[in-house]
Image (cartoon, rainbow, N blue to C red; front, top):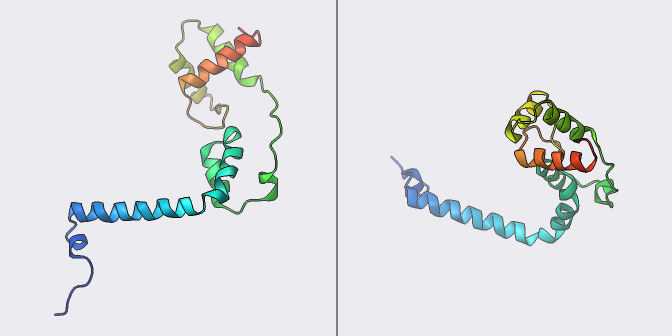
Length: 136
């Protein structure tokens, strides 16, 4: 029989050796990120306030079209979500923020940032906006 190649610690699945390999890979990954950060960080800063992280990653990891790199325009204010949340609150004044989240999820409403799972903080923000708009 011949010699078995490779790292004997990896073959034996030694936890210490596996940890050392994982750390070495992470260090190399961080070094590569830092080397080319000047190419992508300013794009993330420009995209992030208006887009979900998943969309930002999809854009940054793909080829960047010229229209993405341009200056973002002002967003139109949409009163639809505050009106929905205000109507739910007025229908049941004792309803909790979490219950409103569950109701919005069952209605398949997307969050202001386009996600599908609601958080109580988002509902609170919409309730405050509804009050400012005079919907409550």
